[in-house]
Length: 371
Image (cartoon, rainbow, N blue to C red; front, side, top):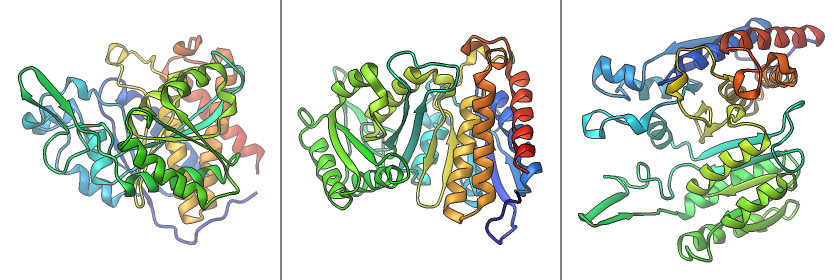
């Protein structure tokens, strides 16, 4: 059946930042997949590629050139490959983390990280998993984004290292509101994760804000878990959780754990979203040890791009984009369900390009079956 949506047919501008390590390979697979969906649904995608990471450092002296931010602000969405920021030189020598810079400068306060079991690929423990971790993305203990000037870590003497944790009422309230908005479209349950028994002031403020938001949504079930208990409960049975919302560092750690429990970190998609912008970014790292060998699993970044399409489609009431996201996710589900079509990290024998070809075929079949 034909797909209808917003009346505007302006091009959908996507900025692609390939990053380091396996970034160029999985970005190529992602763009190839998106071009296929574009040809099927007439989305009008327009891609711009700009270098970040070591390629940019070599070319212009910075891992995050000045051209990136204007291009990101003018785009409808950004696709960011993994970056090797731990290996960059100091910021004073051009070593800026592209992920952190985009999150700060575009105010991408919500990091949405789903974890779900896939057909034919059982969870590593417990029952079927289908949860989403909503991670605050702009404050907390992360020293590259907690201060207006200077880093949030410092050494007043050679023998003392200090780190500042920033928790604000505004940041806490809006991330919990995002979690409740998401839960309203899912199974209507929100779990707030904290460490207020120790971090009484900062997590105390976070909990105060969470409870105030929860009071406005009596139709959504609400509970609270201490972070160390939450880590254990995910191992015991992650299936009982729906939407989990927490602060920056806790969300970073728990989402990797949940994704690995659900099947593999190689499947872990992610969206960094704010009021006006969004960046698709896989949860996993740049894996430089396998770069250039055509063995990387592109699922996480492709799934992240599908999340970006759904985010855009929901905001614009554009059924084409929502349909595009569903096509990609259905295609991924079908390919991963077949052991012979999996990449090596999932026990299969396919490389990046071969996996992508099977995915494109699955998407084309699904689109044809729906007409």
